[in-house]
Image (cartoon, rainbow, N blue to C red; front, side, top):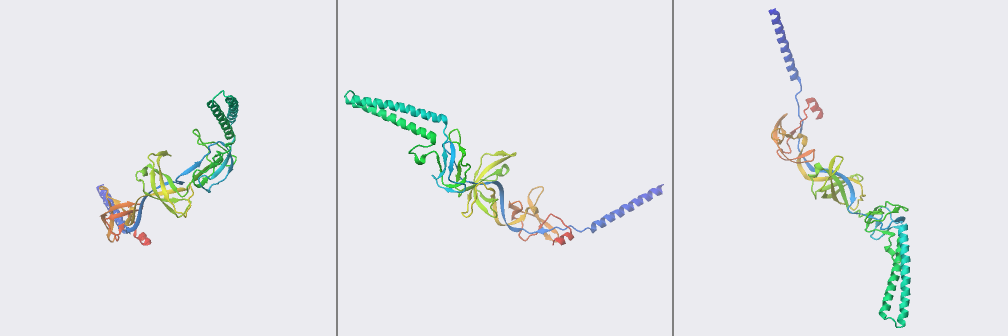
Length: 372
């Protein structure tokens, strides 16, 4: 019994020893780990955040009528340039029956008053010729007659204005002639001949007949997320790219950041505006979608390294890299970082341009040979 146990123990020891030797043999037979290296390079690094929005005129004026009616004739279309005072359209007035009736009654009342003052004046003249009344009484009757005649004429003009929108003697001041109030390009004419329009007053903003703007003064209007708004400030440079205009960028300056954000799709968005420095040779249509790169920081021709090569100490959180000192031998070097664009980071100190930096993607010799 004891002999059997001894044999089993010896066999177990032999198998364990053999297995250990086989494991060590296999371990030594594996290819050693090889690390690639990269050198720092000169880069132009731009730290920026992106805002989406559109290109709009700095000032857009909406032309609205000051009388209700129906569009009778339109003299402009989108894309036309107009000067202040140019005729935009003509409106045919559709009179309100109540107002028309009131104006007609006012004429009748003014006519009755005029006839009464005419009889009174004739009577006063007769008495004055007979020496019964003084000249002062006659002049008072003449004034009353002139006032009644003026009221009668005003009532007739009021009737004409209610009925047709204009009156004799008003010329270019007629309410039916809608004119441009500023000079610029007609962006759109959202009405057509035959459309009914509503006058602009204290209770109604009125129907827009045309939109006019100076297309030489354009702005970018967009929104940034609350996570980015703390990084930006006024007067930062912008690079505007317009989707409809390929391979061209427009410079701008950030001149407005909304003090209050608005919730959109569960996120707080802040409105921003930037004035474009527009090239005279490029026509930018109002309303085009655009992206604005807000330049937070910029460094030209600086020593830079890929961010993926930078490590951080687990205790001090300070950045460092490993530089090659011999064949697959590396030494830790602390570095001072500058600005980053998310791919490259500026190296202010710690390494030189000729240093080879360890890449943390280990490969085997066969793979290394294929890559080189």
